[in-house]
Image 1: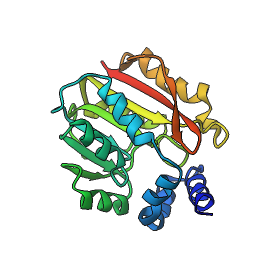
Image 2: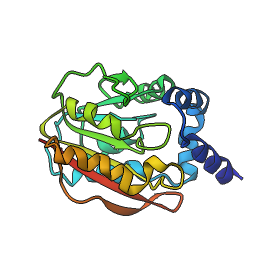
Image 3: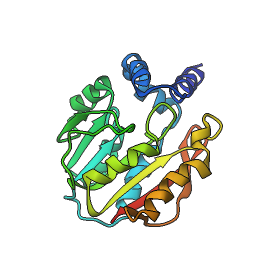
Length: 215
């Protein structure tokens, strides 16, 4: 029964709606989110931390965790030895949970996409991570320019996501990847490697992993 409740909650959050509507759902769900993630064996934060570790960068780099939520990725990054981590999320309720855990140095409440601009200065971070944030009702490819803006030249933008093609036309692989490749062709970033999949994302699904380097 607990698994069904958790699964229904997760499926409900990834629907095509405005970001503001999604944040209203998080306002009520925030207190139960981590419990539901545990019920569904949500291993995405560990996968995300491993992606950063595979870059073989110094442990004192500046990292921004976008769609940081309650801080699950930050916890995994800290376990790996990274200490200079900031959080950005559109839900104040989730950021409050992360603050209680004292994971991050700075906390930014902001929505991205649709030409929105965060309060972060240009060229601030060595790495931006987005774990699960690219999903219907959350982030889409129109947030890429803002992520690139806050990353230093030669810095990295890495994300994990699952297959949402059956949820949304915009998230069909070829459609989403078109947004990635357009910025490659524009000379704004390049692929560190081709996107790849990894099992054990959550609830029996695979993760699709992207890692880009800003030019």
